[in-house]
Length: 312
Image 1 (cartoon, rainbow, N blue to C red):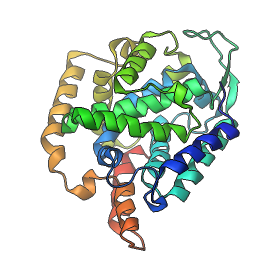
Image 2: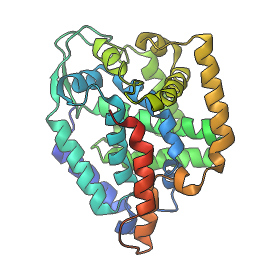
Image 3: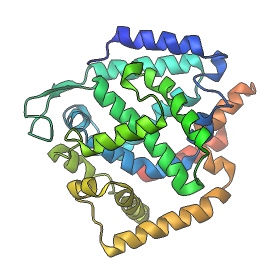
Image 4: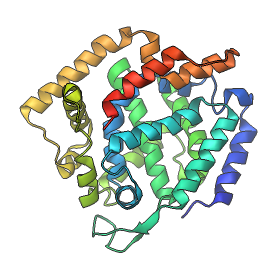
């Protein structure tokens, strides 16, 4: 099923009827979504989410054939998070603008798969607004957020995990995804992710491997150890069969880097200053709700600092 503009507008209208104060946007400060998504630690799971998305042939071939930044998947993921944060933390007007913009961009991304890969034969048509592919991309973000939060900060309560998932359905509707395509609860969602990973829909083809080859490279010598840790972290988080399909190294040295990176994050991250822990979009949202105007110079500096390693 291809999500049309009419589908999107129906879902937007539904979400609009559910929200209270438009200035708080999609969720608001009392939501579990703000509690989880404010954490910069979620970026440490970004490599896994990016590769899981690439493992869907629709996503990999769309990037391969349409993206001007096919050699910069981390940069693409950064831009994805900018849109995600705008929709999670922005006011309702910002949410609407980004939801419609993303749908319009996706509407221009269509083509043919150029290989036999998993469930798809060469010549099969793909569309970036295919509902099945949209659900998978959304699922990688939600599953990754919960996993990374648990990895670094510890497990949320069962009630908070369920609430986070239920709130995430509102986010899914911003892509025009219908409720009948969304698992009813967190347990069903976990089953969906597991079944997709075990299916022949999620298979790593040639474009996915090629694009992933750029993921952990940095032209800046000083950032190479960081990318080395990110590669090991991503390899350790991925299911073994996908790690092998992507050709990620998993030698004893890689496992040692993985465990050392996780241990260091668990030990140090909870003690980071809040202005480093919390993403700038979250801080700006609170400034907006307090009526503060003008630039957030500290947030702008943090944003430049944290995105510097992604520069190519």
